[in-house]
Image (tube, rainbow, N blue to C red):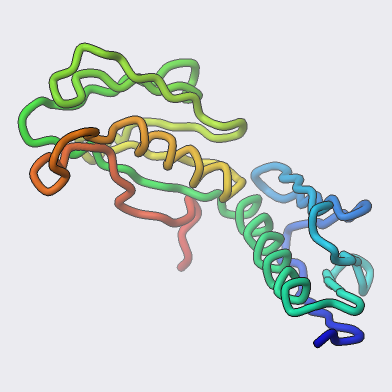
Length: 190
């Protein structure tokens, strides 16, 4: 059944500004700017209350179209958190016999993984734009991935995880790999 009109609204976070132009949302904050296009979704995105409230509307939407409202809301909220606090994923290099070596190149935009399961092959992973990877100073064999866009940070972590998988082996025995150990923000809550 189609509802005539459905909407959801939320307040803009303190310290961020939101700009909307034809379903393209730009959020600016302390750590920079994130832009995302929602042209593929049949929703109307509006700014109300002098730019302090974001409102997402659907006219004559099926349940599938109405569920897109919550998708857009959570995506914009994640964009606001990203430009204010910056997202951070921590990954651990896990190995049983052959130590995995990692080298960070190009100011954190490229990572090289060597000696995975004793292989001679060098695996390189490019970080997505706006994402930086670095080695942890306090914990051995830990990588820290940071960025303002949650989607790009999590996809970069997935690329690193996928490049170090034990293929054609019993995964119950060969647990070597690079795994996400912690997710959060750079700026911690008090």
